[in-house]
Image 1 (spheres, rainbow, N blue to C red):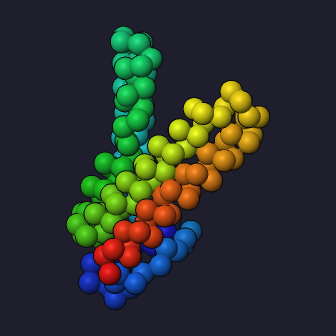
Image 2 (image 1 turned 180 degrees about the vertical axis):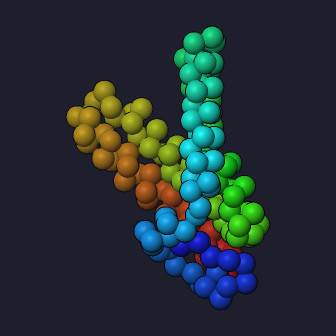
Length: 141
């Protein structure tokens, strides 16, 4: 995915979603370490909470978007608040899709073969996330 600076003509509302694997080399190694450490820390905290308070309480911590907070902080610092806000919006779209994924799995995993349940759930996640992105993009125009 491309990272764009504020004021860049490519960051207009007419932008398209692109995958640029070369962009993965752009952030300094320090940024990757911060993201990994924050995510690992939240996951470890979820494990401790699970042991102390039970799996339901620990599961709430696993739902915490650990890497998002570290990533958004770094993106805001490096690329500006506008790009960070766009990243948060994208995460929100993906989260809505994950709700759809969870509903499909919950309704089908005991009735359908596992591979089919997970395939349909993944397609539901992608469809909901992309539809929400397309809807919000059209409404902003």
